[in-house]
Image 1 (cartoon, rainbow, N blue to C red):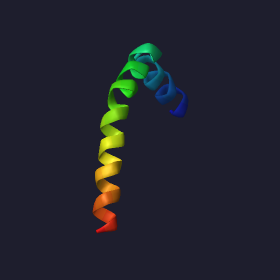
Image 2: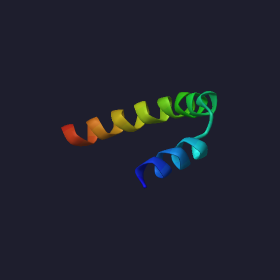
Image 3: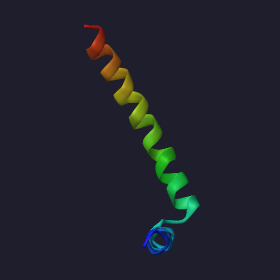
Image 4: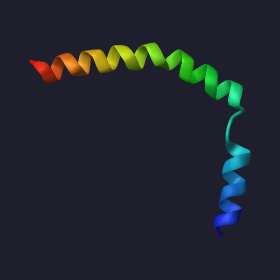
Length: 43
């Protein structure tokens, strides 16, 4: 069962380049979010 699941996940996973591009696009947003979150925690 686990083996079947792993194969399914591997087939469904988007290509590395796509994932990389997505994470690159999301990184500034994450930084902004963490900044705002840190400020929120400090007040």
